[in-house]
Length: 303
Ligand SMILES: [Fe+2]
Ligand SMILES: [Fe+2]
Image 1 (cartoon, helix red, strand yellow):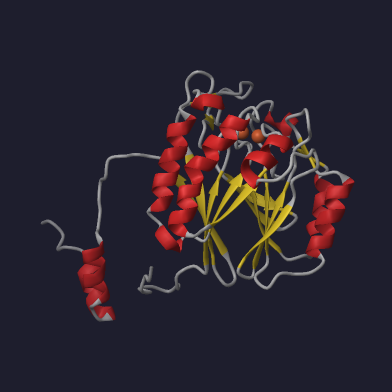
Image 2: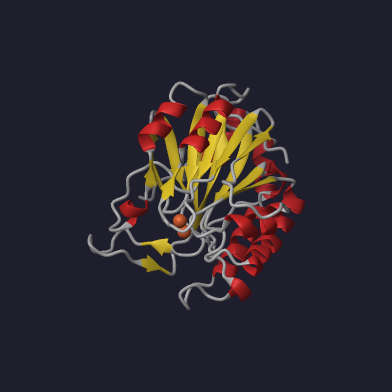
């Protein structure tokens, strides 16, 4: 899909959909008896399908299922793989604390079950994505043990042509949410030591169930909201409240020397304003001056 450059920036080199915390249950049962996680995931897939072949990769940063059930993994995969077929995008699964390594491997990766961490390195052209498994079997907090950190250090010893994105469920950012700080990533100082002065350009995470951004060891961190339900940052400070709304995913646009992350609300919503392809083609056919007159010029002010 060719989009002509009308402004200062060319189209992004890569477009990555960052989806997180789908939390499906066996049989597609509603989460907490309330949240329709199946419909939400279907809506995300429908929205991403509109991007067509501009989409290069889909990164799912964990809590793919709520209880690690085989049927839940089957359902997520069946929902997402048609999107892969339609767009040609690469698909990258990351383990979360609600996932179980054995069923995750069998259900999503067609591998034999094993309790070893599910770390992976994938390449989108010259861009390297390192999927890190921060889960701790039997617990909900996150941790990278010495073996995992040594593995990461070895991977990062060799830089990638377009740099590296780390994708990890428990991302190293503080949260103001009550109780969630107990479920944070442990060993963050050691992680900082491993990524400092390496080619990591961006860290993607999930787990918090709200979209947020910050920096860690000088690296931008982008945490995607959940598709299952949203943690309410406007709840009283000593309460942790998840709500059936405010769902989102994030798009990562990769440029030569920067990244832009953008939060996309999960609809559907009524359309307020819309310009179609025909109008775009009309604008593209104009001279630079004509384009400004056609789309930037304000109508005369009312008297
Ligand atoms: Fe989650
Ligand atoms: Fe989580």
